[in-house]
Every structure is written in C-alpha cells, then in structure tokens.
Image (tube, rainbow, N blue to C red; front, side, top):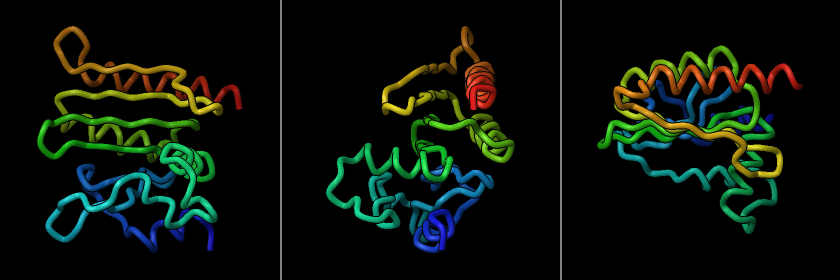
Length: 151
C-alpha cells in the first residue's frame, strides 16, 4: 500500500477544512477530527504512517510526508476564522480548488513555501482591505506555477 493510501486508511478523509490536516494531491483532506468535529490529531502524528520516523523531530516527519506525497499542510482555525497552509511541491489543480474554497471562508490567510532544505523560501499573509485574502491565495498559486516550471 502506498503512503497516500496508508494515510487515508489511518486518518480517513474529510471535506471540512477545519478538520483537514493535509490536502492530498487528489484534493482529499486527511481527517484530523473526531465525530464531534474537534481536532484530535496533530500534524506530527503523520509519523504513524511513515516508516522509521517516530524519533525524528516534528518538522522532519511533516516535511518527509509533504515531500513524499506532494501534500499540503493545512490548518484552518475553527474559532479565529484563519487559514494557514504550506507546501514544498507545486500545487495540483485539486489542491488549489480546496485552498480557494477554504480561503473564501476565512478572514485571514497565511502561507509558507518550504524549500528542499526545510527553510521558508517565501511567505505571505493578509486579510485586511490592503491585502485581500484572494490576493494572498493568488500569490501562492503563482509561486506554485514557478515551482512547477522549475521541475
């Protein structure tokens, strides 16, 4: 079983951004919530589906999963109406659709583009009149297209 199928079997999937932990290349989101829509998993728990990573630092496990699957780490606050996402590989059309929909339901959006060395290459945030949420998301998509052109 490949890593994506293994993670879907372990966490299940959701259509609710507030419950999503990672957006898979297909646009499916791993479900990090219980039946009452409370987050019960932390991103580091992705190590449950990764071979030999239980002792590695938090970000090593998260980055390994992002790199091996092309997934996007996602955090949509249930209470503060904010969206955070990060990606290491170009976004798929399905991932962009999920992010666009989640951003439409958010007052603020922040994203980071992570390099192969684990460092932040680019970052942006917004949500006020001077920088609307859609502009921030559009910038993330433009950066993703540049990444895609390089690969």
